[in-house]
Length: 406
Image 1 (tube, rainbow, N blue to C red):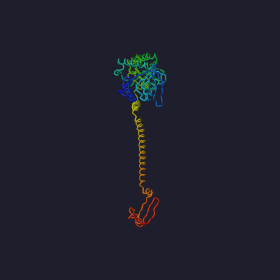
Image 2: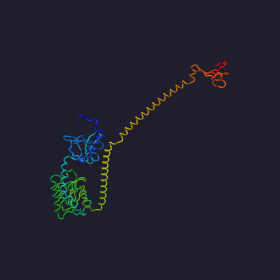
Image 3: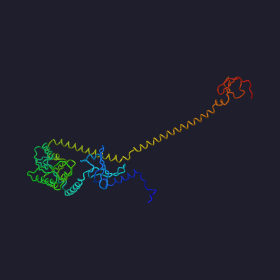
Image 4: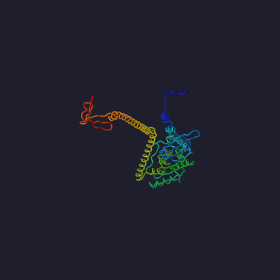
C-alpha cells in the first residue's frame, strides 16, 4: 500500500513519545502492578537509585527504584534473584523506552504467603474478629502478666527487663511456645488456653517474638492462632516483629504493640516515669511523621523533577545563545561591509577633490597671477598694472608688466 503524502498528523519524536507516556500513565491498571521476574543488570550508582532489568523466559522489563524506596529494602538485591516488584509503568522519554518505576520489592516466595495473608484477613474480618467494638481495655494495674513466647529468645529477656524496670512487683507467668516453624501454631494455641485456665487468671497476656521475614512471622498469621487470640477471656497484647510488621494476630488482639518490649510497657502503665516515656514516644512519633513527610515530599519532588526535565529551559537558552552568536556575526559583517563601502566612497571623493585641486591645474602649465600690492587675483588685462606675482607648479616669482593687449 502506497503511503499517503498528506498524512493527517505528523509527529515529532518528542511529541509521539510524550503521547505514548501519557497513554501508559493514564491507564490505572498500569499504575498499580506487581511484576514477577529475575533480576539482571543490577546497578546501584552513587546517587543511591537502583537500576535493574526484570526478565523471564520470554521478555525483559527495564526497572528503576528511587533512593527513598531503596532505603526501605530489608534485604540485598542480587543478579539472578527471583523477586516480585510493585510499582507503576512509565516512559523514560530520553531513551524512548517504557519501564517499571518500583516502590516495593520482595522475594518471590513471599508473594504466595502475602496472597494467603490477604485471603485470611478478608475471611476473619468478615466474621467480625477484628472489629474494634469487641476489643477490651487493658487493665491499668495488672498483678499477674502471662507471656506466650520462646523461653530462649531475646524477646522474653527484653520483656522481663522492661517489666522489672517499670513494675517490679508484678507476677510474671511464662507459657513457653516455639514462635516459628510448623509446630509453633498448635503450641501457641495451647499456651493461650493454659493461661486462660489458670486460677487466678493473669490480668493480661502478652504474645510476642522478635522481627523477621513474613515466613518467620507466619505462625502468628495461622488461622487457629488468630481465633485463639480473638476468643481469649483475658485481654491480649500482641507484640510480634518490628514496628513495620503486621500479623493477623495483631488485628485480633485487644492491643497491638510494635515490639515485644513495647508490649511489656503497654501492660505496665502504672509508674510516674511513664509520663516522661510517653513524651519520648510522642517525640519519636513526631520524628517518624516528619521523616515520612520529608520522604513523601522528596518523592513528590523527584516525580516533579522527572516530569519537568523535558521542559527545561536549558535547550532553549543554548539555542538562543547560538542565535545571538549568529546575529553578532551578522552585525559585525554588516558593519565591516559598511565601513569598506564608506572608505571606497571616501576614496572616490578624494580623487574628485584631487582633480579640482588648483595645484593640479598649475602642474599642467597654467599659472595664477596676482597683484603684488594687494594680492588680488588678476582676471583681466586691465588689472595687470604695476608689479605682479606669478605662481606656477613649483613656486612663485615677481614680474613687471611691460606691455598689455586685449
